[in-house]
Length: 61
Image (cartoon, rainbow, N blue to C red; front, top):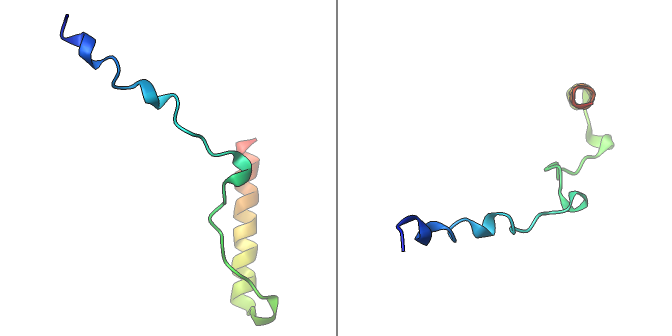
């Protein structure tokens, strides 16, 4: 028995790890938002964030 034969079983489980379906993944934005309490800076920040998201989506396509 050669030396390399003992290491063959080391990486067998890499292909069988469980994967998370796309519909169960979250985008990480778990923030409650109330339009009643929003000031001008909040609205401006949301507009900039939405514009950035649209730019990223266009680049992915």
